[in-house]
Figure 1 (cartoon, rainbow, N blue to C red):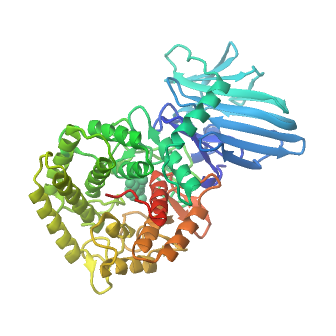
Figure 2 (cartoon, rainbow, N blue to C red):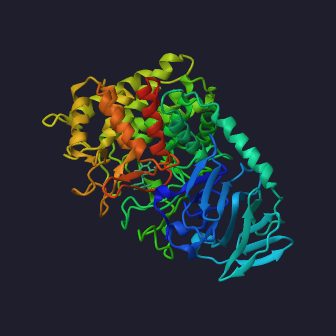
Figure 3 (cartoon, protein in one colour):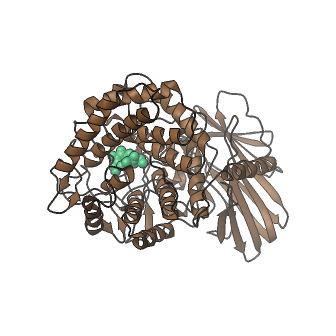
Length: 595
Ligand SMILES: OC[C@H]1O[C@H](O[C@H]2O[C@H](CO)[C@@H](O)[C@H](O)[C@H]2O)[C@H](O)[C@@H](O)[C@@H]1O
């Protein structure tokens, strides 16, 4: 059975990522990309759906684990009655084939170890054909091939369609297991030198992390979140995945299980803002280039999300042979939300361009042309109902947050032309749209009796996304409607000291049965809003509560269940880590990720 979500560590090579449990088992890995089929899918089923465990023969869970310094190299340590052993897991940043390297090191005494590899391609459904070739085991099924070897060579044996190796390590021993994926039709992959690759990986990550400009009291939490965001970036294209997994449930046993291994313009724009705030401009440049390629064409064809290389078709289907995380079905691959209209995305994208420009990112003429086309499209669409930031599968509505973000788009476009007169654009028209949106939201999206903005026009429901109103500059934090909204969200969307995004249990809010946990990004937004209205003590207390629910390695899923005291939803999730970074910046008195 899979562990708790927060029991998993993330390792990755900037093209894909693996989740490693406290028991030494890699239970999730998609090869060769984040969104490829998984060859280890025990996370969403059981051991028979593929995993790779290396651990002492006697011990179950490790005694300690940590990332080495400011890197994505994971050390897992077992202290056993006979000795201590360490397993170091990492994926070298890739030139060609992806490698997963696991180095077993004897620390003291002697420990009997076992490696048990069960490869199951196509999301745990396909058992490969295994063969031996000079010091390698090779697993082949359809388009996939995986090569396994050790350095120095160790005997391996096959049993029950798994590959085992039993061995003993003594103090000073170092044995490297190297698993390499490549297309089955290609010639054998080049050999990676595992010990050199380890040194190189440590150096690459330390060098990258050293650029982080945040120097406040929460530096280690901020940097771990930055590293996690970087790990979710698909280096060849600059696309950013929303999370490393599919179908980790928002409710244990429930149906709210979605595939997040894609690039949402919203999540990516917010991620980019956080990276820019942290001093990482190269990623901003890469994502802007990704975006220009992905959305090239008619702005009417803009999707709210794409594949990590810019693919448009993300057809959703259910993986019937996987039993789901703790029985949470269906397991979904693909995401039908790709076909939705979500008006806030335009505001997110224009805001992130605005921030990038103000942060010194090189300007490209076609980047401005793209923003102009997006504005033209939005000018004709902002009055329409949409599916909104929460991607509800019920009927379209006039979501307040969507309209506020349409205001942001018009505001940033007008201000860009004001600041850069050489850029062509009809600032008068955008200023006029900005004024119209503002007036409409304040008239139709605000409930004067309860002194709060609502989820959609005319609705009594609340929405934590309206906490962003002061952050994006729609109204000043001192405005009584902002303060009233903060109070109302605290009163009505509180979930064990954290915040729900809306009330899923009441009425037909999102078209889905069941409930969900507190939404971590929204909880960070409440901390930001509290701080902005001068209630910094409450903001800090909430922020500290949020830091406390991170995993021992500093990772966050999408949601938190305050009753069961466990994380929920896809993992690790960029949205949550972006929230952490922005709140840390705000509470430190530094600029956050908004224009
Ligand atoms: O719960 C309903 C929706 O959940 C997913 O969307 C959420 O995740 C996205 C990626 O992080 C985020 O951009 C969005 O705001 C969230 O609501 C799922 O992808 C949707 O299909 C689903 O309707």
